Length: 236
Length: 236
Image: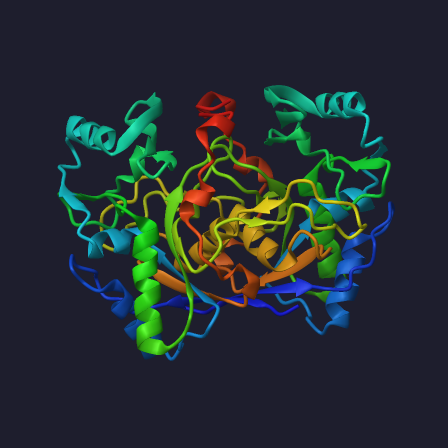
């Protein structure tokens, strides 16, 4: 079985509203001599997607009331509050802290909101990578979420294009020939987390290539596949 | 920044109670000419650790009452029930489905329980790898858990040795020189998930090497670091 390689893409400049993020990623990959290949999966962080799509709003970081109001306006449901922390559900169905509103790595006095349609953001990058390089890649837009019960943050997928979000192994046989009853693997989340290992939080890297994934995973999908329907969710 | 490589270790034979799993892993890595290097992180699945440590108990898979009783005996607290599914907290503090009791890839008529002390299991493997190969590696024991709010399973760390579970980036500066207030990254979970991408569920692969991680992460730690204290947990 071949190895998986995760290649950070360095040298993406500070992203400004209106920039073509896909072009910046293609240029940076080219500059470091990492040409895209078919069945590469390109992971880009929500932060640079939000900047390119001008999902920035003015916010005084010291104005707790304004911050709370902004988080609430980005939420369709608040699950928990503790101090300044709000755990809520976004319009996309994601449950996360502060509705994904983010202050870090953004210019002082502004906050970055989640992309309106992260799948569409991913598709746009996928289309431009294909047009410019000929390579058919998957694209994941990643963000950093907390979890219930476990400390620490991990990167997960909030948008996908051309790569499965969840791979359903139900019905396949395990090594003893017994049916695997439920094995739906959230591969897009695992790919996003793997990319985070090379991007880090403080280094400002905004994209990575994951190379060597199962080619069967490259297909149409949506990050909505990762949202547990409320009726099945025991913790919402 | 260098790339990360994830190398599946193939050819580990069926693990039996009393086997030295570390020796099987070292032998298999040697057979495929992947000698261990300092700062490799070796990920092994809970399933083979539990088999080697004889954490197997007889269980008729069709006896729902016996299965429920076993899950309850492995739990310190039940959070939710739905049909046959129990979400509970194990003695280790992990919240997962069915207290980690597992029927797949186990001989018919038996179930695998979680290792009693997965950190110790990881340490034992780390010690033997060092004794046999000279390489100082990190070791993660991984298991496949579901999540609140998101569909699909991901692999996470239930035991660690010689590798950080959580890396605390609080207080480091982001690319704009602003303090990152909270960025504790659950790197061991991300490493476990990355390894899962090459091991898969149906293929029976039981170990992988993750090579190229930040050397600063190689230090003493415990998977207990990944358990959110109950008092801080808004969902327990």
